[in-house]
Length: 86
Image 1: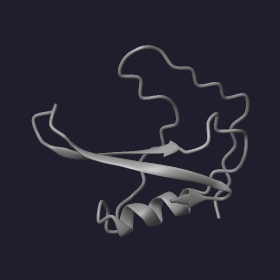
Image 2 (image 1 turned 90 degrees about the vertical axis):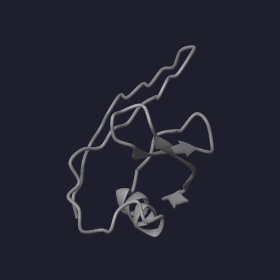
Image 3 (image 1 turned 180 degrees about the vertical axis):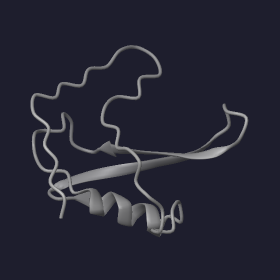
Image 4 (image 1 turned 135 degrees about the horizontal axis):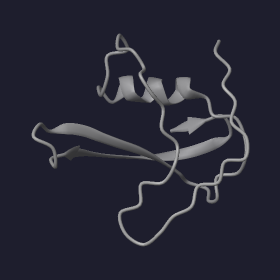
């Protein structure tokens, strides 16, 4: 899956650690480190619809950017963040 000039690998599983199961989906940048640039959320949302994770009629409540560290350590360094709605 691509957003702008960047390519992402989608990793999907069923989360079973809560009382109710839910879909856990992470997009991993194929090129590391993920250098500065624009992130087009439409590409990610379209991919979620194609995977039947969402219908496209839901509301987007939040966006999370960072590491999902399971063991070891990780760093996320954001020096500037902007949002443009179109």
